[in-house]
Length: 341
Image (cartoon, rainbow, N blue to C red; front, side, top):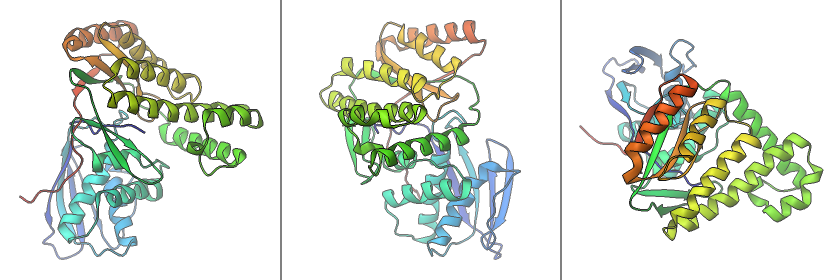
């Protein structure tokens, strides 16, 4: 995997609670909602679902035997919600930074990522991988990070100068993404089992071609995407190290076609955005990003071409789909940190 941490933030400003009851009190500026719960009885909230990512982190930390101090906190940020830009992982990692600082917990960045993933898997109920939490915790400014999800090793890969990362929000709310993600994960695990390997990362393109006929059709289709995407990721990292953006762009385009045709996680609005982006001068490549079924696209664009690119894609999308997209021209930023005020 080859993600970047974008320059958008979730910030939690907090202080130890003075109520002496072990009660955590939260306020979200985005939702203009308050949420409160007791550290001795952490349960999911149906009324304030945004708080479940914080609740889940505290639940996991206590399960690991870490004593926690209750706190009062305000949660704010500019990571778009429900857009496939990992806002949940950002909130989980921000909570872990807060808890580590408040309680003096000796957690390194990889451990924070793992605990955040565990909170989402076991408390929230989404069987996500580790990538989102890991890049939120370990991002490197002006670099993508080539992540080995088995060892959790990350290798910074420089992004070429003069290339902008343009994220476009389709404004199509992602539907059924959690259940669809879990289904795709089960299908990939089934493919790995039938191919006799721990995970699809252990299957080369050549080995997959030899064993693909033994897989059920839909499972074979999902596995083909993963195997090919792994290969594309390694080739993209190699090209970025060489400053070869002309090679990276087509890999983006191939990735989107695979997500559309093999993994089947795109929707017409996203496909429209990608097609419009790929047709613009100065666009090296464009693809869907995130869990699918709505959300955002990401494009690599010559920095000088960005204003015209944004105007043309936004106008074409509104004319075709009838929605006005939100556009974020991003840079790669550092990962999470805690600061004393």
